[in-house]
Image (cartoon, rainbow, N blue to C red; front, top):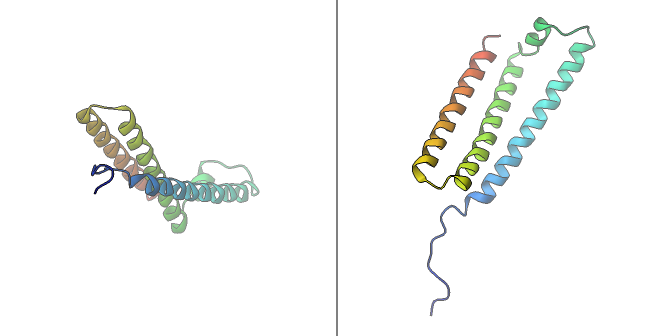
Length: 121
């Protein structure tokens, strides 16, 4: 005797994983903001902050890597959020997939652009 349907619930496993990923990327972003704030306070204690001082914050390789990790965390955070928005509010499969594709392209472009900016300093 079987009880209940044999319906396969597709996508149900995404919920907890994405919830945890959102929280972890948020923690990475908060840690980066605190690090950047501390560096800005330290730079400000030496005088006014102009372009040279601001660019100088990102000269050390560890700061470039940390900034890029924060950018990647932001991109993944944004991807999870936008994917969920598209899945929840766009019913037409073709349009939803097109919007998801455009979102991926845009976020990849942003990652490449951020890397180009960081390593040009």
